[in-house]
Length: 437
Image (cartoon, rainbow, N blue to C red; front, side, top):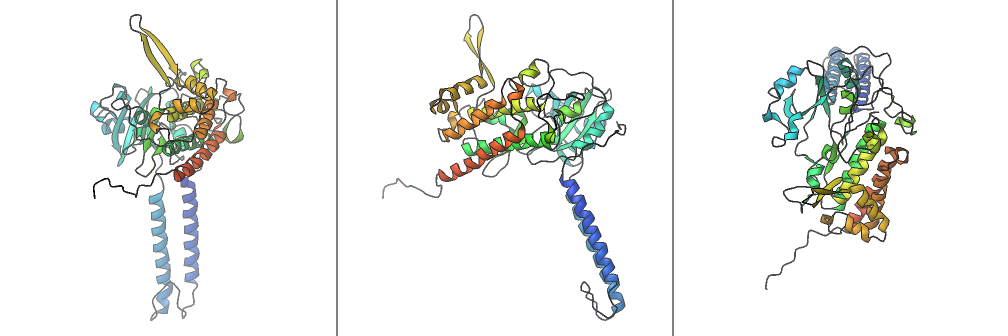
């Protein structure tokens, strides 16, 4: 799976690798300059980096050796700190690591839907492996993987590598296995205990909203690609601090698997870094044809109609996730209204959110926002975030805002949530005794 040399250089993401490489070059140059200066030190003058006084002739040699050792140690430390680039694994590597993709290695053993996801260890790293249909020339995967491999963000699960099946019809993607992480959908809607959620504060929910927006902004503007997989199930909640943090999973999956359009340009005027490209001007040689991909409730109307994925469709999915964080409800619900006829009533989260905002006065928002927040949230801020999310899920793609605007607005709301939480924080260092004295 060695791809042909691309005709034009791929656009690299801004990453810590480039910075660290520049630092290493600077360190090496400084070390060489120091060695040259030490070598030119007069024989009968004490070098500032040497402790030898009886043998002036050895002083220069000692300084040069010390500088060389220090430079080597610095370069070794930098090399250890650099992130490893994704690897182009072989199919046999992944098959061996997952015991031939056995049920014992499934990511969620009890879930039948997890037959396409596995957990294992790859090159010493705990990893999650996902299986997807490959709809592009397998030879192009290596070149695209090299580009996406330079993209790193704290709110995005790290891409470790990829491999194609021997028949070139399936792509296996390996990501870091985030320890003690749970999908946002499970934390909001636990079927075993629907009345409980660990996300019981307004501050914690705004933190997750800010993380997801920041990550998707990076995917669009820095990684220069489209996610096409965003949902509450692909948002992983982790962290043991006072506030949970979010990471979005499946970064680069749609791109590497060939789900994105070839040489597709948006007509919406939104694009990467000021351009009008929906797919960031990606140049791909071929694709095996695209089917409608997505999760029910998160797919933009143009995707359901057979249109191509775009940044605007990503924004639609983000808007649905924001509405879930506000209400705790799933995007689409079906309730049985007539057992005899089997008639179901469909309830859309977008419709209920729009009705709550239209009611005005704050009472509609109080009834619609997740009751497990116990009415402890700023109603005005909740209405602002709901209105923002509804702009993200507009039926017309041209009416949706780009991620630069959305991320800035949500970041401002998060800062206000911090101030609100500090103002109304209940003191925990006060104890009250009701025992008789």
